[in-house]
Image (cartoon, rainbow, N blue to C red):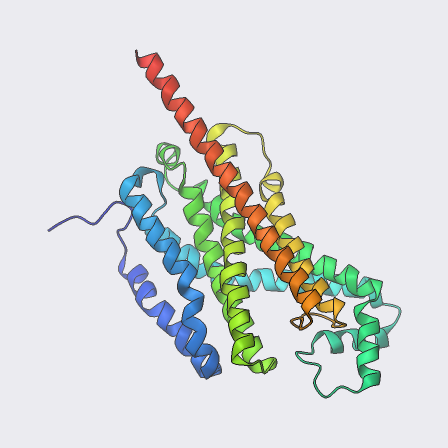
Amino acid sequence: MSQPPPNTTLSLSARLLTYIGPPSVILLTFLASPTTGLISPLAFLPTTYAYRKWVKSNNQNPHRRGELEPMIYTYAVAGTVGLLGVGLTQMAVVKAVSFLLFHHDTQASKDFWAEFGRGSVEGLTSDELAKRVGIAWSWKNWVLNGALTFIAAGLGEEILKYLPIAYACRRGTAEERKKRNRAYVDYALSGALSFALVENIGFLYASVETGNESWSRLALSVFERVIIGGTGHITMAVLTALRAIRRDYYGDQLSWLQIISPAVLYHGTFDFVCFGASAWEGNVGWIHPTGLGPTSVLFGSCLGLVGTAMWQTSREWRGLEERDSMMEASKGQKEK
């Protein structure tokens, strides 16, 4: 009987999780919203693509890659317990900032959160729309958006993506860890892909059920969340992993905060631009812009941010490959 490829041996529980998990997610989504359930398989595309890339890389250099079973568990935990923890932390941050902004005016707080929670402006009177615009353009809305995007979302979510790397730092013996100098990327991606999956399905659900969007608008949401947003999540995770590899395998002096700070800034800026485009049209919270100007700025800025992050990630990767080549060349000269 042939042996399975290295790093791919799975226990029964891991196999069951792999076979039952995705269909269960799709089924539960379908029960909550049939339309969202029908398009939810699209949210799995980044995971499928990343897995195929891992298989190819693992076949070429298995000693450098992560093991599949802990990656599966990382995927499951990040999308459930991890997201729950981040969600609670985000709620605490937002409540704290809200208290500082509105503690002297409870009515203003009620008005703000009533508008923040709207998924649509249909049916509002001209006076209600004018009041909403006033709140959207107020300095308090921008302060809260900054706290929500850079601290609650940016910092909180990128810390979650760093946790699988912290786990990988301690997995196995020192000799095993020494060989797996690209495993951080695999574990970080496992967490990020799970996070992106749940976030994308949630966003699609909100678009379908709350926003009452047309199929064309829904297709745009899929492009934004699965393609642009998913690429952003993956890129930030890989960028953080590569910087952690620089610290642990190449001796660069980087603290954990320095490791995640580029991803936090990219993530926070991306989300802040989205909320800013929404506020441009007089919305509090997130409602997709409809005007040409805000939509163009939104797409241009977000694509530019993701593109810049991808460029930096590619540069980090090439830097590590060059250092590997130099180390191999130096080792060869010493052996001669």
